Image (cartoon, rainbow over all chains, first blue to last red; front, side):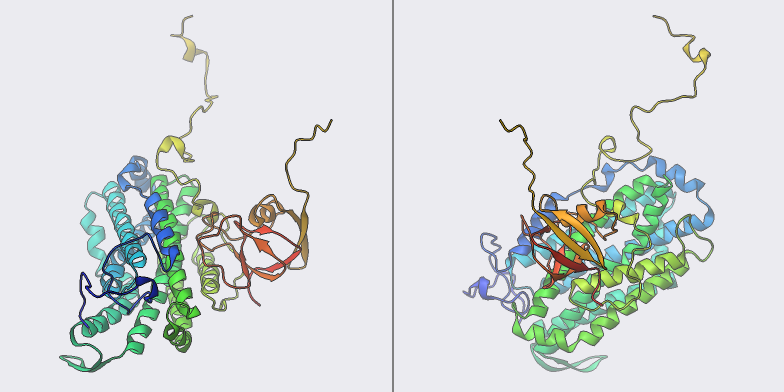
Amino acid sequence: MSYSTFNRKRFDSLKEPMFFGENVNVARYDQQKHPIFEKLIEKQLSFFWRPEEVDLSTDRKDFQKLEQHEQHIFLSNLKYQTLLDSIQGRSPNVALLPIVSLPELETWIETWSFSETIHSRSYTHIIRNIVNDPSVIFDDITVNAEITKRADSVSKWYDDLIELVNLYNTLGLGTHLVPGKGEVTVSMPILKRALYLTLVSVNVLEAIRFYVSFACSFSFAERTLMEGNAKIIRLIARDEALHLSGTQHIINLMNSGKDDPEMADIAQACEKEVYQIFMEAAEQEKEWASYLFKDGTMIGLNAEILSQYVEYITNIRMQAIGLDPVFPTKQNPIPWINAWLVSDNVQVAPQEAEISSYLVGQIDNDLDDSDFDDFDL
Amino acid sequence: MKTQSSTTSKLLHRVLLNGEEIIVSEDEPLLTQLERAGIQIEYQCREGFCSSCSLKLLRGNVAYPVEPMAWVQSGYLLACCAIVKSDIEIAFFVE
């Protein structure tokens, strides 16, 4: 079947599955098969923010004062986050829009992906503020071995799905001879399996891979350094928490078989691979922590503590989609991070926020009599 | 004449967690009451969408004044928005 941007068939979209049913035709939100996606859209829209609203002028000075190994930690995390959001700013659209069958889910995917483009724009805003030539940072993303290793494991699931869906939309189901690849079989179970594993990998990306960077950013801010950056990261973390809720819903709906009974069988059949995706990502993030701290640690953070946190957060995320936690770490080794991750006091205007460098009504006790010399009543 | 203007509920319940017992009321969500008792619970959004504060509900009942956005697995509760409605037993992770 080929994709149609306006499907002329008459059908009841409330009876369609989330994916691989009819292409969506009318974008209507008065009725929903899964109202959760409408709620996610509303929430995401209420979260809208612009990077330029966050003042980073102090961060520039802070960055110049950082030790060299701390600059390495800061910049490496920025590069990794830039990579992750470059992928997330386009891939949900490219991979999922051609196969989605519910209007509310279609719009959630677009809203979700759009918010990732805001994150990408915020990295440009941060990088422009701290270095004179942003190209030095951006150009390294495609050549740095530590980053590209991660790019491969994040993008391969999307790329496999996109390739299969392209074949499905041009040639249909069956076995096709693909130049350079040989025979490729496209069947509904194969497509659904590729979709399910992609969603798991996206869930891992948004729910685990970002968190090492978050921890480092907040650790700087705990020392009142790079606070503008931390403010942006808090906004990003709030968005990511919503996105992971979206993927958890899609995955749990699939697992339950309520949306598409065949999807529940597929989910069960690839359970082993799902565990592998989670464990591989956790191992990679632990390696990443070692790379970050290769030249020195930060106050309150080192590779070992961060690795424990990766294990802990992986356990939490696994449990959220009905998997058994696999790691021994059952307590958060950096509980202070939650006060930074909490969404309810994320605000953009500096006078409203709890940024320690913006304190109103402070008392300066460092005065002597000469300070009152030009003071007349 | 009665001068007491308190509208707080008198309903108290026992929460059993790792062998420790905490008394909670129906006035506030479980998370804030556990924190006040000095128990560290994972959280992020504190408004029911991120599922970080999901805890295993081994026994008893909880209710949600507003349905949370997060998917709540069967046999689990969301501490940030769950109101305890009976004596309950909870755990951090499935053992």
